[in-house]
Length: 394
Image (cartoon, rainbow, N blue to C red; front, side, top):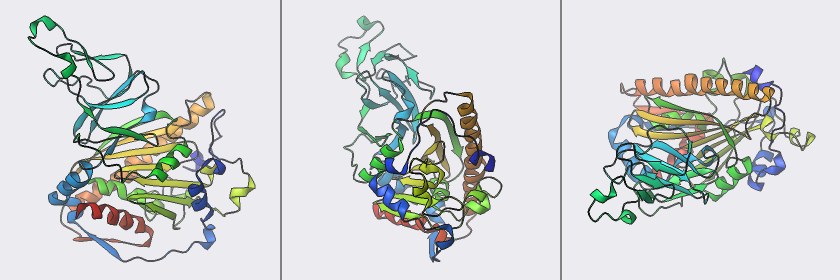
């Protein structure tokens, strides 16, 4: 990982300066103490095993969070231009997301209104003006309207205007596409305007998707989420990869409802670094880590941003969509080398370390032990997040 940290800066790329961030982000960054001045505070907190292995808890989360509120389903960056469509298996619901010629994003159920066949079977972005069912060739515009029916003369009384794709309420927030999966009126009260502004400042809506990988994990979604809320594991789990870049120091944390923003200095950080070169890439000095309600993780790095959507499928099954975002496509061979090495490195860190830890943790918990998980001061954000979502469950 040290090789990655010291890689040459890709040419002709956008960087994020401190001044480019929101005033709220800047204020928190200014609060980060020097590494030598950081103070850690012990914590006494537990959560029961059943929160992660119990069917009752999982069903409560589904009913009161993932079906009650809009959830993230895709990134704006996946749609490179108007006339784009993308199929997503989201939380067990087949979705078809379009960016029509009017640039509006729409989310539909990926089911033909003839007999329910999926219209798009793969999960790759496509550029096209219409989408045709592979079964009987019913054709739809990217606005969801039924525009063509094969052998329409054989359907007595068919009204095409009433057979458009089923559209779900949706909204784009900070470069993230949210949808209300049960089709009811959406309640966006848990989606933070501040987080949306932060994401805009980080350039997430205008980023380029360098890499996208889907992980199917045998673990409860909260166990997958926990490592991104705490620094306790970094020097231990990541000892052979990125552990040497971070210290056991508390982050500066701001909560916006059930959304958490953490900022921390990299190894050797001291506040004076921020003003030594005001045009410096701020991501070289500090790391942002976001947990955005209910299941979106964003982590900044020097040359890219990691975005993960954690989709609960069952008590012990989580689908993770990982995206590596860059400011734009690589325009030089050097940039391509940096991005490729970064992508391989981060897939190893997340896939073979963080995600592996979630799976082996769930395996142990599923055996019934320990009855209660215990948390320390370096894991305080986990408890903070659990408190926020538990208010919605009970």
